[in-house]
Image (cartoon, rainbow, N blue to C red; front, top):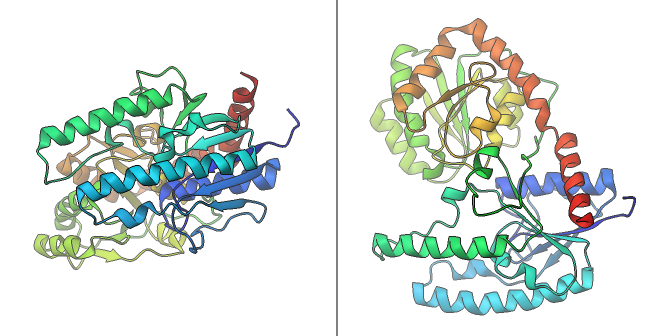
Length: 384
């Protein structure tokens, strides 16, 4: 297929530094620069805000100005009525936009448009792409409602989602582990997220530093890591743990103080030069309760830092070869996490060997390999 493909992506916004936005930007830039694809990204929110990650100059942004964000903080009834109005507006504007662009393929990143993407009249092939794991997608939490009502709403949303996903040509998930969960579908494909960098510099594995990276929020499980670090720091008081991120800082700092590890567990802000920080560390830890993929694991491995990770759904099992290029711990086993961190601390030769192997094994996530998988999928979708 020699034709220049025109691809449209639907995503809420690009101004926020999150994994989904980062992965889309990496792929879109590569498609535009190396494949010559005509890339269009359609946004609903963030009007007037620049994309956090730079885009290739040939990529076209379309801002539909639906502004779902303005509903946050409103009462439940106002959110329901407001959401319904905005959905109707989005459906109308998206259809107009797609009919003007006339893409070959339209990709929904499974936000609000997945409810009507296959009703669009532009004639493009529709794909779905998810950056969450199934079990934690479409969570509904409203403490004003009884637990059984919240569960009923989530089940309703999931049934609705399944109906829509049956209509798309292909549905792309980020891990084989997650693919196995979508038993209701026969159009599931697995394509991992691409590695955002592959630096020349690497950790030499001798620094007495453990690193963790992510937003300070319950999903990332830093509360579990801090509890594990209390055990580690008693055995190895000369080692430090640095957690890079932003969010619920005060709450996490309070736990650090209460656990008595403030001198060795340091909460640091997000930095642009995270590669340097990985390379100054000898062990990486992922303590998440759940992930869509776990991009920070492959980032650390690319810098020659062996990971210790909970087997949370989903991603770590797809990425880490336990005992070869990192260590896996049963999800939620805080004592086990502390034990595996201590094991790498106490075995420097093994730690350095695992770090070198991690750097080799992570090559399979290079953008060149991931982009080729997408190229094949696009061409297959159009030929089907």
